[in-house]
Length: 383
Image (cartoon, rainbow, N blue to C red; front, side, top):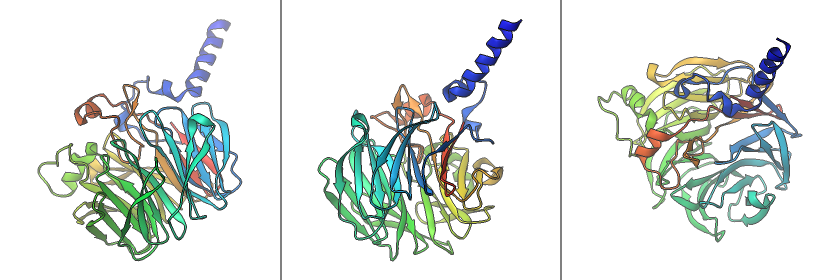
């Protein structure tokens, strides 16, 4: 009996130690929402956390901070793997991506630079991208189908698209009249959405740099924006009053924006507002669509993480009060796995490595793991 008791105790420890084992439990991942408390609180940064990003394959999590460093964590073991002395001013965003078999980490900063780091070589800085005239607020690898391209948003009112192999700027996109705070890409890289201090969101054709639609309705600065994945089209089409959802092959149909006016707005890519979600008591700072398509997750300066059910017209169905001890500044969902190939960055439900939409929808395994960062200097992992 003592041995049985010890065995049960050790098994419980194992279950807690490896979040991947949680996926074996009888739980529908499409209905999963994070709960309290967080499984891990990662502490090492000296100043507020500004950004987090998951490695598409390994259990690495990068966090950037106003302390000018990037820290690399093992999110399964809860251990700090490395501190990268990255920039001379605050790190404002990080993202993993790049050529197949050659994943890179990109970072951007108030020091006006974008830097590329090689995870396979102790995160050595392999390239610095220069061209923006002010703080660089956001960076995103454009798409697994366009693995060499990176897009950045800046306080200089521009978006820039870069070739990470040469370090050259291949396109500068102008149209915003103030600080561009965030940018996100459609899963095939054909479309961009950006938002910022001019209180507008803009949908861009990434190839031509032309504005496709302007999203007007927020009453304060837009802090975050993201494309909806095809898995959510059915729910969002109902919200939009359509009888039939757009085809899953369409990469850009709906976007969500979050702003300092405490609201989240969901739009068609033609610029029509279809829903405003009210519930946060302070600035909305981060958004991510559930890969299963049913929920939208948000975080904000009211220290909460919230879950909105798109199948119930965006009803608020989950609130984690005190997700952090201070403003929650950033949010990412761990990328899913398709036959050990990354499914996307958890930001927009992207497919990767030439996987067809049918394979993606049929075989994708959702990883129920979310990371958040906060002004309390902590990174938290919810599983």
